[in-house]
Length: 282
Length: 319
Image (cartoon, rainbow over all chains, first blue to last red; front, side, top):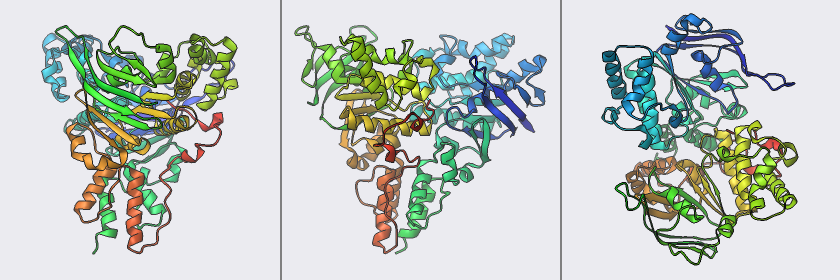
């Protein structure tokens, strides 16, 4: 089933007086299949965050349509179900905390939905379990690491029980350990709970773990393919100001210098094997 | 003149039940002209350490000496903080959040004006600083900082620090939150500033693959202590220690070790993608394979621009 469908979507932010508005999203058509793991990349200003905000009606298209499980985001009557279907996690963990105790923070969403107390408690328990933070339910988020805070922000979204989770550079402000924690959580949600994940990131190592990559450039979809196929495009990526992960860069450099090594190498093991094939023989 | 730190210890909330030791008897020397990378997980003491260097945190125990200016816990003689901060420039994380004035030129000239320079002098210094970070003062000088793109804002914030021509430049995670191209540009900007303005550079980073490409010495903090301090070329000897400290081994080091276990010894000194690639090509050459010369990985072609005058077009969008 299609989770999110965009048909010929255009969106421009309001321009200053006397200036012409520029389309931040410029004629995008796209379908995201339920249960898939999609990475969205592109340099800053390429339109990827705008795209994310169109997914759950935070922004409405100037023209074209965005439908979420068949519901049009322009339909005001549906906006609550749309927002409960597509949860968003943003970049700065500190901006997403609303309460000084973890369980209150997670309960904020379901409380707003007007759910009965028992159900709220069940959801808070479950959400904390899903992000591996049950032992922190009575703690305060303010003394936590960035990775822990971001997992709480995810838990806060999970308590709404969305079918799709959109992460808008949610790993950008974290250290490598915090990034790993968040990636592990969203991969588990995708694999074990079949949740649809749309992950916007600048980290190419994270992109490699997705099933599908959408490269944005100038508000348009420049490439839409598997990570391996995208990173093997070499020169073309430079145009979109994207660089492949370190292993692919090394494979590419070796190939440039005449070594018999494929350019679409995606993991350290593959590069080791390729080098071993040339050097291990005797 | 170097930075000499001796027996530096520091506790937050000292004398309260929340007392937490952040630095524990740290001693080290950083010489002129070094490019030092500082790493360590959150809470390891690295930020507390650099905040000591320009007197943002008062010394509790031990001493810090920067270009002859000595900081201790003694009340007198009072250190010359003005001189210290003109000597050692500090660029914090997300420095663009600290822009405050209504025009770029006023913001960048704030430092020199505070140091007692006349308005015209201060603005001339600001214009030069803007040029150094790759911005055209005529184009951006009169603009409000919020009109600029994120990457431009970060460069304006850096200009506000280097405007005093500090001999030492300290940057706390200068590439955080930038896209890959923006990162590459800021790193090359730092190399350029090192060459033209601030010969000693200290960078805090979380990105092992990045820091190994630029710094020539790595200091790792753990539990308030210097866990180890090595020339970058010897990093490969410390893989297991890195992992104990919760840090990733650079992928080049990991692969070199894996290949060694499979019988391909690429030799010593592999720390980053460039040294790894060069070592593999050298092995191939020794085997009699024809391979071309390798000049380092420069995906965006930014390195060659290092010496070229930076026009506004060179820097694209950043943040």
